[in-house]
Figure (cartoon, rainbow, N blue to C red):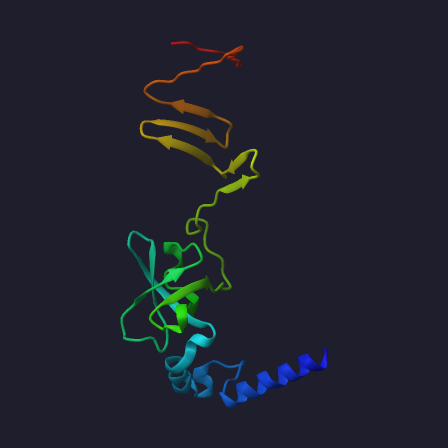
Length: 185
């Protein structure tokens, strides 16, 4: 550790002592929760703030949050840089503020807890790999490409189903149909 690092660490510790912050205990344990809230009201936007995701509005596009020292008592609409799902409601979120304005929170992330989400709560995931020459979509169980009444479905078991009011197969070369058995009409 260089001398500059030691000086910066000492300055940080001094600032923490002056602000009566104890990193090992929560604000309620140290009796500084009122000082912390007052500090949040004054200038919490200098760092991150921990809030709670309490709901989603606008068809799940706009998260609603609460955080200590916020302006007013109602939930605030927030912007987010992470993909949020209903399963995250009630979880703690990391907040920063646009232009240091406490009424304009931005969710930077969701704090991880000791337990993982159950499989039915986990958001669905599809892998997409694009390299400019091809696009690869990967799903665990089933992949469906749908437009109106037409669809192409790929399943984990290897089935390919093409459905539509009109299906056309056209080729300028050989058009082959191969299979263990082929049924027409």
